[in-house]
Amino acid sequence: MALELADIFQQFGPAYRQKYASKILPSHRQAMKAIESCRTEVLGGQVYACSACSETRYSYHSCRNRHCPKCQHEQTEEWLELQRKLLLPTPYFLLTFTLPAELRQIARQNQKLIYNLLFRTSAQAAQLLAKDPRFVGGQIGMVGVLHTWTRNLAFHPHVHYLAPGGGLDPDEHTWCPANKKFFLPARALSKLFRAAFQRALQRTAIYDCIPPKVWRKDWVVHCKAVGDGQAALKYLAPYIHRVAISNRRLLSLSSGRLENAKVTFRYRSSKTGQIKRCTLAAEKFIQRFLQHVLPRGFVKVRYYGFFGATCRPRLWALQQQLALTLPAEITLSQTEQTETDESVLARTQCPKCGNTMTFLRTIYRLTCRSP
Image (cartoon, rainbow, N blue to C red; front, top):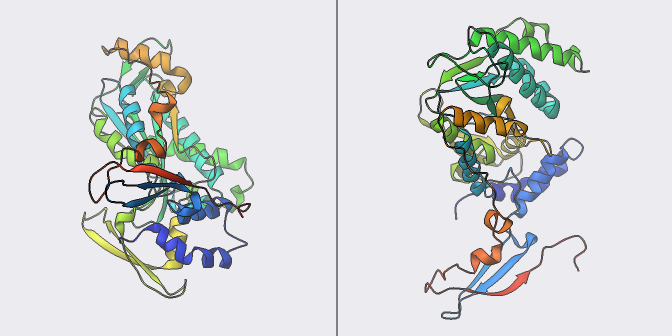
């Protein structure tokens, strides 16, 4: 059987939580326990049997934690389909704002604060520069996605924005197209982003912990054309419901204590494109994974400008103005959105003979109040 993240957490999670009992965040503890119990008898499930060959199948419930690599796959396609309906028939650009290395430790210790500031100040900088008539001359729309990891699980917080090449005139009725190959100047955007972040951080208690040199260096901001936006959406979609590492990238797990056991996984080098291997102590691997677990309730996808939820009528009007048919509202009933495990598995075929398996009984979830 292929190695899974749950195997690593089941084997070393209790020891890790005991060792770092006073330091581990509640969100980290919750994510670990959810992944450990995902699709096990702990969460309950159903038992199905084949009347033809007497084959029995146990189907356990998913944890549905957004950091579990076995959950959330269907939501990615649903999100992608929704975003396609919001696209405008214009050239699109991908903006990327990256926190400097000097701020990453602060970000790791103050995730909710720093991530919120990262979103707010980068969007503010882009909107401010876009109002300059030399570039757009109006309000732009952006879909922002937070991304915190590199391919080898290193901590690297940054935000991607997908934005159509143009904006709304101050009268909010006239479309101002941007240059098809040029949207916003990255160097000017970097300075505005840095200044906005500094001003926002000055109003917090952690400002004095920031080394002064960080406000003198250039901050990394990229802006590139991405065609009609379809390919960029496919690039961003996996980050919406994907975790820092998928099960298929895990290669091996050695035995031993938490500090000595080794986890090996593969990743593709961003510089060479070659497949490489990374081997870490199990303790270090767990630490790298958990640093990408988001605070409870944190929203990692945000909409700005005319993409905002309250501005959708304006967006539909823009689509009509730019010769698109007004899309129908996406309203799925509860039965269309999700299906119960019973309804899905009732159609499951027997792996041995191919006949439909029938529901036998329910396995109830184990809780602290269970006998």
